[in-house]
Image 1 (cartoon, rainbow, N blue to C red):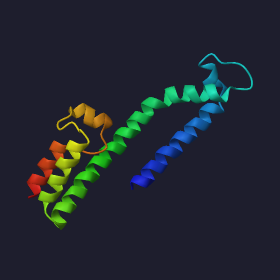
Image 2: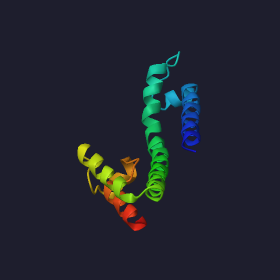
Image 3: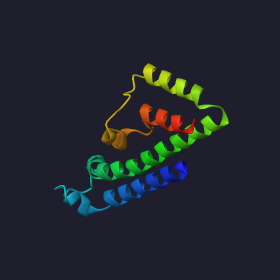
Image 4: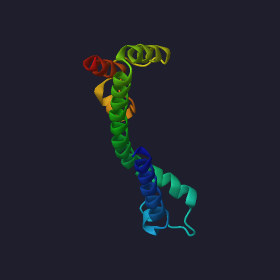
Length: 127
């Protein structure tokens, strides 16, 4: 599922890039009227325009990834026990200097994995 979503996001980005780079109106919006159209400059402009859309697509992808992590933790706790996984998560968090309780907005915008506190709480509920 994640692969299909990633491929769809890439296809959308490349299709939009094609439309932008082949459109004289796109360049004219930035005040560029020379011919031939400057490809490098078009790529820079597209990056500026695409960034907000990329952020929105990233939010969807990260939300799904966090949900899958909770599902994977639940499977591991059911297959074995939650205690070894909880110990391993704490150790990884300490070694990687992860923030134990990041702000929820930071998690929403930037985290592909749930924060340690949320994962441990979910595992404790399963135990």
